[in-house]
Image 1: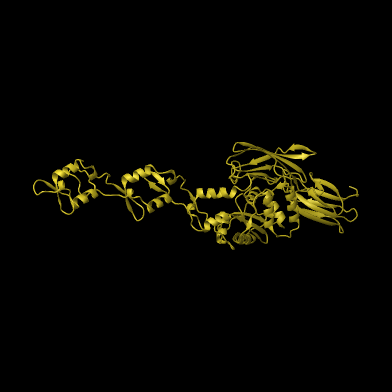
Image 2: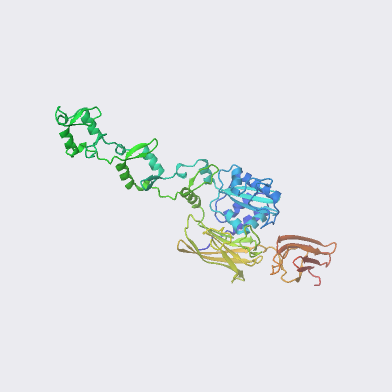
Length: 546
């Protein structure tokens, strides 16, 4: 199977982002990214936007761009610090009036515009998967002085928290003599107990041998004794009636001997108290009822619940699982990133909090596969490979690392999420092909797609040695790339430029290994760039001697 090509959408993203002023419409960019892989668009939520704004203001006060791994966390706030609005994204959402805490948050700091901020977040695997989450459908965005905060939520859970349906709320089952009965069934039973269920006591006085007598039968006899039960004034008699009527002993002995079966009490004399207010129910009836409890009345769930709402609603996990399935089922079966046909893909990944590659300072742009858990239960990745396409031939990228639920050092990936990291930066302006072979609920699925890294629209200068010279045309913008080395991974982080008056140099950082440079040299004036990493690059106007 081949992933649907979405090059046109990627190109549209590039054009739209290029036309945007700094800080404008991050919201639209997120939806464009989701649209490329077929995910539903997010709708604006003002309360999530308020939560994002409060956190952006906090970050602007207390955190600097690039401050990763120490100092103030990008996602946590401390109550003793100015601008505190909640310790976690969920608490901040509740404080802003959002009805539940089941939200996701992305934070970006230090980027000049929305496009570069989104590029950075999509390069970071955990932040990418947040934007491409199957379950969210709401978004609040805030842009601060240094920070951008995105808070994502769910409208279906919002509606449940506002007015939980009866079957959503956790109700403990009723013990039906060792069998768990659904509380709803118990309530319905109490509303309409059958007459046969009601406990009827035996006659107050039993036979000499302890045999119990039917209370109604004896009441009728005591009120109007049959002829042979009446005491005639001589011989033996029994006083077993409340009205002091005497009954003939011979007749009463025959009753106790069982000669009148209708006179005998058929119950055990035991009862159970049910319902509220309490009603006595015959022990035999309830024992038979519980022994033959229908499936529809049995409680078969886990007795587990969660409390995601601002209000203290205990919501059954089974209800929430069904809610998840209903929300996820319309979404795509799987999502890959970058999408098929994507262009201008950043070639490198540098840093994320938490860090998926704690042993590396820089790696290649990660590839990801997400499988919709509502549509596929069991996912196995049998093969996940990357190739660079050179003159029409595939060259395998052999140094890669696959992260999944078991190997992710931060335990953040679910069993349905997979990321392949090239351990070296990808090349600028290069075409790549991806192959992935999966088992989805036991069925084989082959994925094949391609993408192109950024840089194809600019001449590339690769300074791979400590001293390097390049001839450049005046007024042409070049990508100057200093590949990371074993002793210096951030090769282009800082540089000093030397050139004569009259020459103009425009230099802009692209990433920690790459600059965008434009030279307008007077005559044959050279530009010398001295990098803190120890590398020296000399730019010589074309036509001048080296």
